[in-house]
Image (tube, rainbow, N blue to C red):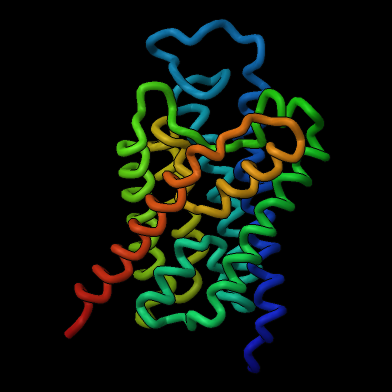
Length: 248
């Protein structure tokens, strides 16, 4: 089978990231919208929305898990379904993906993320921006920048290690990559979401930030370095560690 052109692969990356943001970040926005008007959280129900604590983060994590798995199975044969600039950079750094194509993939991912966020805003209405912030990520109260970067780096490290084992390594059993990668993202979000939002993906953060800026939502650009440094460092470290572990 012939390799799709770079243009087609870029479209697939943009579409996959659009779906990731629409349904994943959209789930975070919906959670905040549903929680509007609820009573203040008690010490036992501290969290993002009405369910409190891990209940909300599990629901958001599962939304991400399902859409990521769907996007990988639908588009993986076309573009590889990176859906994440940190993944693209890590694969390029380990010489598994050409640097010459990386910029096109990253631009496509960011454009897709922004379009996904805008489409969600148009679908869900102004409350998705003013209350839900379109699911934009930011450190939670009491979390410093260093802590947030560390949480994002650790979460993305785990994600990339799994990607290397189930999708990149030719010895991996066929057919499980989408399911396992999706569930890994869901698990990381459930555990670390209330630290810095568990973005694990610079494009996933960029899309809602841009859409919020265009539509009058919160201005969170000051936090963008967290979601660039953390995921990229974590993904690159995991890719190089995996190579070292399996090298004969």
